[in-house]
Length: 181
Image (cartoon, rainbow, N blue to C red):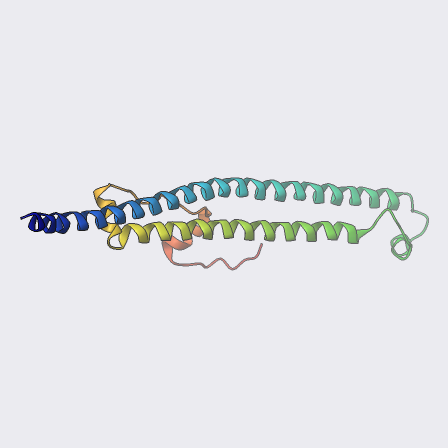
C-alpha cells in the first residue's frame, strides 16, 4: 500500500513541482523585462532632454557667431568707403576678423550634432521596442500565455515618440511631402 500511495503522490506532485518551477521562471523573466523597460524608458527621457539641449545650445552658439561675423563685416565695410571696388579689395585682403570658414564649421558641427543625437535617440527607441517585443512574446507564447493570464499580467505600455507629420502619414498611408525646407 505504501508504494501505491507514493506513486500516486509522485504523479500529483511532480507535475505540480514542474509547473511551479516553470511559473517562477516565467514570472521572474517578466519582472526583469518590465524593470529593464522602465530603466530604458527613463533613459529615453534623459536622452531626449540631452538631444534638445545640445541642439538648442549649439544653434544658439552658431547663430551668435553668425551675427557677430555679420556685424564685423559691416564695421569693416563701413570704414572702407574709399573706392568703388571696396568689396573686391576687401575680399582679396587677408582679414583675420572675417573668417567665413569658422562660421561654416560651426554650422557643420551643428548639423553633425543634430544627426548624431537623433541617431542615438533612434537607437534608444529601438531598444525599447525590442524589450516590448520580448515581453509580448513572453506573455503570448505557451506556457507563458497561461501563466500570465492566471496572474493577470498586463502588457507593457509603450508609445514611440513621433511627430504630427509622422502620425498623419501612418494614419493616411500617404507621404506626399517631398520638400526639404
